[in-house]
Image 1 (tube, rainbow, N blue to C red):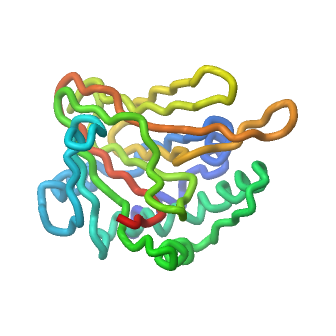
Image 2: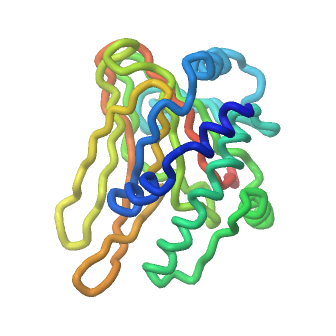
Length: 237
């Protein structure tokens, strides 16, 4: 994992932070190698190491399937959580300050995890999602409990228009007293997308106001699409 740690350190975090503040998301290109992408896809087919499998259609979440990892997490997932969280904690704390919310997140990931565990949020939320033709994911937020971190990441393990068609990543922004805005993204294989879990601050004429965000996946027209989702807080259920 030393190569991954180095690649995370080499990310242009100044640009990434600016994008997150401006848009509520940022795309980091080519973070995972083709080899790591394939290892994660292969891992999905192994039934060991997961705590729960969700068939999305059963719960009207969409059409597809995902599996939550169990502890201990695979090394790559644990590395992503530990190395990326501190970069995002400072952004999250600026957001809380801008919105005048009395909340500050610890800079070290283990301390956030301890807060979750103290709140009986003991179950890992990292997951791999798999979609086939016709698959999609309805708009939602990944909160899981009272303790939640306002940013999360998803890593794309297949190449759009090669391995699958359709299946765009969709972000919606619910602007107060106005129509919602949708953003459609098409990251490439190995890219990492950082995006808003729940809400973000937007600057208006009278200071910052809160804008609620949701995310989902549009319908796949063909092929298979796998993604690794890394959420930093743990879950009650």
